[in-house]
Length: 135
Image (cartoon, rainbow, N blue to C red; front, side):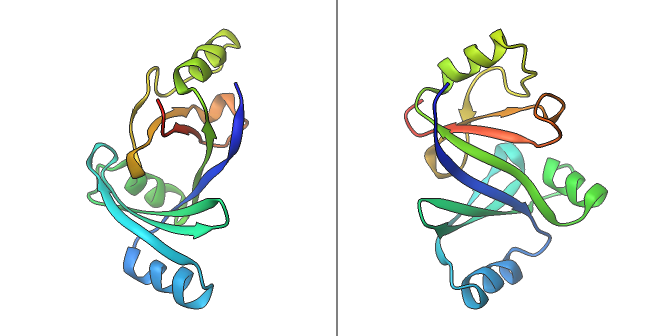
């Protein structure tokens, strides 16, 4: 597996509009887009930081994994995402290393990327996402 860069750091929030104002107006980050990812039950805002982004994740409903995260841990860093060239190949290599996968196969994510999550029990407590625009 070859990691190219940190794709994004995702932050779980309970009020997307309020958080956008903070990151954009207080910290000066550029808002580059917003979208709904129905599969994950979230509304996402993307803010540019160099080659990477901050993703703000607001749950759409109480059954959303992000809503459950906020209920259990409060707002805060949800996961880190790494950009990889070949997501299928990366997942295959991680399986061989006996890394526990949440997603056995790539699935659609935000910004038109294909994504897959690694279980935090295999990544020292950090929910980790791999993403690739080309997968």
